[in-house]
Length: 103
Length: 82
Image (cartoon, rainbow over all chains, first blue to last red; front, top):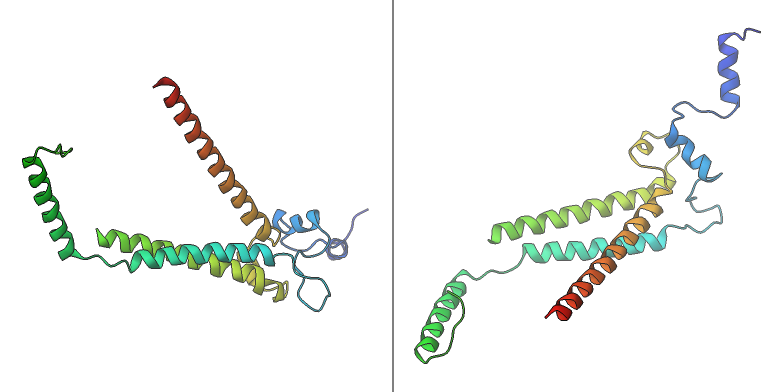
């Protein structure tokens, strides 16, 4: 029997199939019957908050590391002085007969 | 190379801020948005908001364990051969 076009559209929408029904829309229905996190007022506590706390802690740690890296104080004058001190010490020790390793 | 340090630090903080804001929006704000809004297209379904961090945490822990075991085996082998 030949169903007219508008009736077939009504039948499809009555079965609960929505437009854009790819795997992304079907996956929640396959996994569960209701949405994973329900907003308050439904009497159900929200499951993702502990995982959210852990993720935000990790993000905070990463942010502090990045900020510390950005604001690390380099002292160019002290670096030059340090290199000079190292050369001087190596010369001194070599003169006294101590084995001063590299180069 | 302080410029390289600053660049790496900036990259790290940018990555952490973007991950934090995306995840916050995904977990906290999206349940209150009605289902037909277009912004739902930009986020995976909400089960993945738990699966993804748990999965990456498990992967990180297993990588750490494998690395520690690898270093231990290598040091044992060196001690046995020396």
